[in-house]
Each structure stands twice: as structure tokens, then as C-alpha cells.
Amino acid sequence: METSSVGLRLRTLVATDCHHKWSTGYINSKTKYSYGFFEATMKIADIKGMNNAFWMTTEDHVETGDHFEIDVSEVQYPNYDHIGLQQYPAKGNKNLRHTGLGWGAKFVDDLSSGFHDYGVLWTPTEMIFEIDGEPVAAVVTNNAVKGPADIAFSSALIYAGVPDHPEGHDMVVKSVRVFAYQK
View (tube, helix red, strand yellow):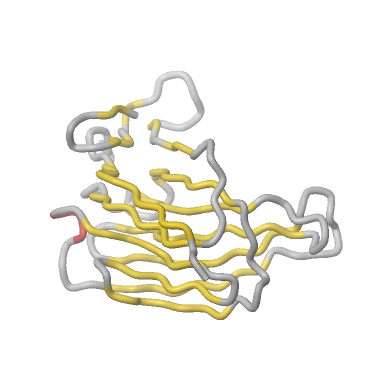
């Protein structure tokens, strides 16, 4: 990873000391957040096989025995975004199975050609996901998904069609905006 006037660059590099051929990027917030509006301006890598992700994970909830992953965006070159909500059992809870739901949004434009805004409005009762200010998916949560949650950005070569030399094809996060939910 590196920072510059353009933003945070999650670099794709050749790896020499691990079992993968390439090294990609991951960063996680130290601060935890609850309900609000979360939006990032990102430019995805211009290669197939890369998962350009903006996501959040809640802490384990003792009372419900679970935690949630909020996939604000998992963008794939050139024009597909997967949005999702995953429920996982809390550490040690063997009575709950992983469940999830997701949506796909396909666009005409090449999403790697410039910066785009990816966001979610998270309230106690719902989540509304948006791209470039336009709603693309929504889910009623009925107070099931509670904070605090961290914010994460990651790039990973995990899909079919990874090119032979992905190094130098990076994801860039230009800005992150977080607004607290006001009742």
C-alpha cells in the first residue's frame, strides 16, 4: 500500500516469500462505527480476476450469537459490482450457520476508467446501497444488524481469468466519507 495525492493505492506486486504469486492490499479502520452513511470514491484495477472491495464487519453480538459482514461493493473489472450482507456465527457459536444474500449490478461503462462513488445508508431498519449517488439495492434488516463495525478496503486476485502478470494493476481509494445516523 502507498499513499499519494491521488489517494490510497492498494498495490498488486509480485510476491517472493509466500505461497501466492502476488501480493495485494488490505486496510482496516481502527475506529468502529454504527449506523450512518458510508461512501468511498474508488478506482478499480483494470484487470479481470481482481476483487476490489469496500466492506464492513460488525463485532460478535453475545445476545444474538452472530456478526455481520456488509459488502458495500466487490467490484470486478470491467463493469460488475456485487453487493451483499452476510451473517456469521459469533466465535464459538455452533448453533448458527453462515447465511447471506447478495445482488449484482452490471453497468455499461468501464468502472476502471475513472473514480466512482460506492456507498451504503445503514439505519436500524434497513440498508440502501448506492453507486454514484443512485440506489442499486436495498434490504430491510429489522434491527438485526447492529454496530459497532470497522471499515475495510481490500484487493484480492480471486476470480477466474487472472492475467499472467497482474502486477501494477492497482485499486485506488481517493476518499472515504462517514456521516453518523441522525434519528
